[in-house]
Length: 436
Ligand SMILES: *[C@@H]1O[C@H](CO)[C@@H](O)[C@H](O)[C@H]1NC(C)=O
Ligand SMILES: *[C@@H]1O[C@H](CO)[C@@H](O)[C@H](O)[C@H]1NC(C)=O
Image (cartoon, rainbow, N blue to C red; front, side, top):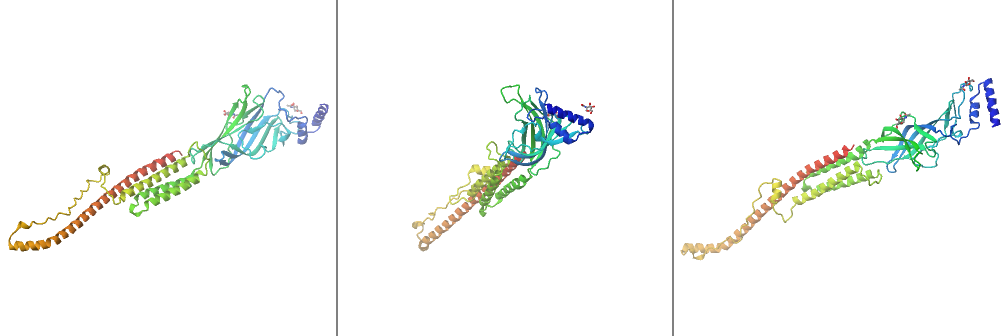
C-alpha cells in the first residue's frame, strides 16, 4: 500500500514535470489492479455491459446436423471504474489499447454454442480503454450455433436461428447485460450463395433460472432470419419432376397396341424414385413433417403409379382376349357409346330339309326327283359348309365389332384419365409451389 502510494505520488510529481507517456499510463493503470473483481467501487451496483454483434458472414447452415456456422464480430462495452485517468496529465492520451487478459472481462458466452474443439470462446484480442474508464473489447469469432431447422417448406424454407448471449456466472444484480443497438449490425455482411439474410434482430430477456425469483439472468438474443435461395432445387429437382410428369401425360396418347405405354411409365417411376432419393439425402431424417419437395415427389410418384395402373386397366379393356363380351350398358351410357351391336343369330346347321318322296308321281318329276335325290346330299353338304362359313364370318364380324367397341371404350377412358391426371398434376404442383 505504502509503496503504491509513493509510486503514485512520484508519478503525479513527474506529471507536473513532463507529460507522461502511454507506457507509464498503462503501468499506472495496472498497478494494484485486480482482474478477478468486478470493476465497481460500490459492490451493490451491477456492471452494465452492452453487447453489439455484427454478422459478417454465414459460412454454412447444416440442416442435417441442425447447426449454423457464422462469422461474428462481437463487441462488449463496459465501464471500468479503476481504469480512469486525467488526460491533461498524460499528454492528452485519450485511449490506450492493451491485452484484454490484463483486466476484468465479462464472461459473455453464446448459450447455444456447439463446440468443436476446446473451450476458448474468443481470441484474446486487445481492449481499448478511454480515459473515462470505458472499455471496448471486440473480437471476430467463428462460431457454430445450434438452430432448430424447420424443413416443412423445404426448399422454400425460412430459418430462424437464435444466438443467445449472456453471462455464464454473473446474475443481473452483478452484471447487467444490455443491447447496444436496437438490431444486429449487418453492414459488412458477405452475401451467401445458398441463403439470403432476411433480418438480424435482437431481443433482451431476463430469465429466472433458480428458485430465487429476484435473481434474473439477463441475455441478449440475436435472431438470424435466413431464406433459402431455391433456384438450385427448382432447377435441378423440381423442373425434372415436372418434365417427367409431362412425359407421363404423353403416355396417355401412346396407342396401346405399341406396348410401350407401361414401360414408359415404369421408367419414369424409377427416375422419379432416384430423384426423390437424392433430395432426401440432403435432409435430416425427421419424421415431424414432410418437406414440400418430398410432398411434390410423393404426389408425382403416386400420380405416375396411378397412371401405370390405369394403363394396365385400359390395356385389359383394349385386348379382351377370347372370352369377349359386349360392353355393359352402364359403361355404354357412361361413355356415350351408342346402341349396342345386334346379337348374331346363328343359322342352324340342320336347316336343310329333305323333300318328301311322295310329292310328285310323273315320270319327269320322278326323274327329276331321282336327280334331286342324287344331288340333294351334295347340295346339303354344300349348304351346310356355306352356312358354317357364313356363321363364322358373322361371328368374326360380331367379335370384331365387340373388340372395336372395347377399344373405343378404352380410348375414351384413357382420355378421361388424361384429363383427371392433368388436373391432379396442376393441383399438386400448385399446392407445392404455393407454399413458396
Ligand atoms: C486534471 O488535471 C488538471 C491539472 O493537471 C486539473 O486542473 C483538472 O482539474 C484535472 N481534472 C480532473 C477531472 O481531475
Ligand atoms: C434494445 O432492444 C430493444 C428491443 O428489444 C429496443 O427497444 C431498445 O431500444 C434497444 N436498446 C438500445 C440501446 O438500442
